[in-house]
Length: 271
Image 1 (cartoon, one colour):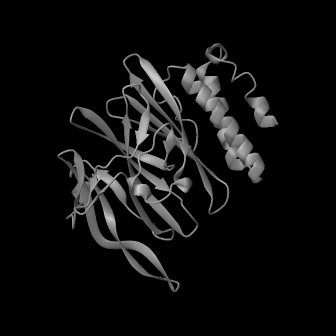
Image 2 (cartoon, helix red, strand yellow; image 1 turned 60 degrees about the vertical axis):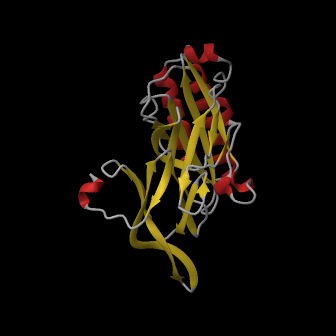
Image 3 (tube, helix red, strand yellow; image 1 turned 120 degrees about the vertical axis):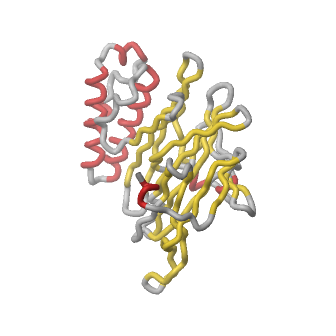
């Protein structure tokens, strides 16, 4: 009940939002997120996070807010596209060591209007091969996204997302996904732009042992997404995927991310 009390009056429309200073609202949002982290009871933790999500969504829908306005909110990931048209907010709710719930909101600026879409993580309900699926209507492959790249081909802009998924207590995943927008500003996730020479994927999922660090990043000097090649080894008598000493990469060429094997890297490439 105390979390519902904290947001009483916040969900009464934009007039209520505009009447309160942005600094006060962000301070309240930061407090809610800190309460989420402090809670040990799963039900109370979930209630606090839902209160935060509702209040944060209302703030985004009712305010024209600078990109750095939410920097004081812990555990909130914020990405802004190079063309300043896209803002992507992601965060997670750790319920157990093996169970995480992901939240996301994406904003798209079109002409003088901002379209705000709340994202619904559907990855656990995807049948078949999730690498080939395009998601619409706010559906999303939930993760914590940490980089956003922008490419244009055929007159259309594509935003490539790099993300992290805790997945389970045994394995984690690094992700590559494609974000696009239609003429109404509605987002879609996934597009067949990842070409490994044999087939094309709409997203890439690299699953590895949770005990091993794994590197996936964009290197501006190389103009390439680089990642460690994974190999299967025995971990405690069970097979597991761990990074090898080799790097592969993806380079945007002719409208696609094309796989490049055995990338030679130096310390200068990481600066």
